[in-house]
Length: 220
Image (cartoon, rainbow, N blue to C red; front, side, top):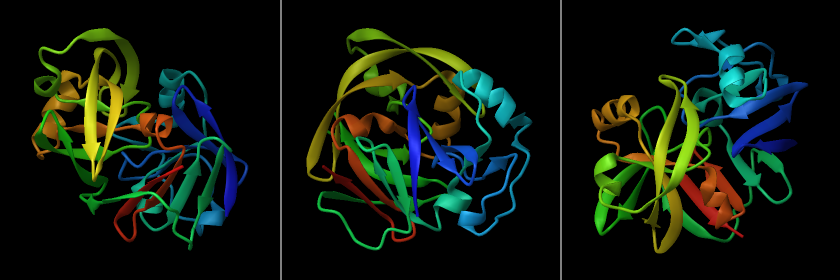
């Protein structure tokens, strides 16, 4: 199943079954208003922790109908082609590229390296860029600021830094954001050091998210 998407502000807004859908592996649940027959007509909650798609659409700066989380995405392999602006579900053929193992704690988690230190990162297609713990960017050069939002803490502004993030046998040179306090505390309590966001498409325009089999493939 192939659908077109708009890359709005670094987020993936796919046109699926007459709905505008935010693809978000950082959310364990799907919520919004609409139906997804292409995905087997799953039950869709109205909101998460008191927040719905209307409020999140305001934070995003663009309305959307459904946020699709890992309760659905975790059952499908899907290929995001950022150049073609397509997302294809239930991909059966692998792509050539760098393979990174994934584990799941409700959202996908992968291992990486920052400044020679092993880190655990949440793989979040709902994040426009990568974010790291303040301790991992401390002392680094601030090169600007990001304005973003997260479901649990709303809108925030943070400094961004140049950082090299290692995945498998490759290194990505990224401009990363500093996690705000609410996310720092929440992720730190479960041993997560940051979030790997959609800036990976700047290096690898084709990414296969095979969540059922626990494999992320970065391809060109």
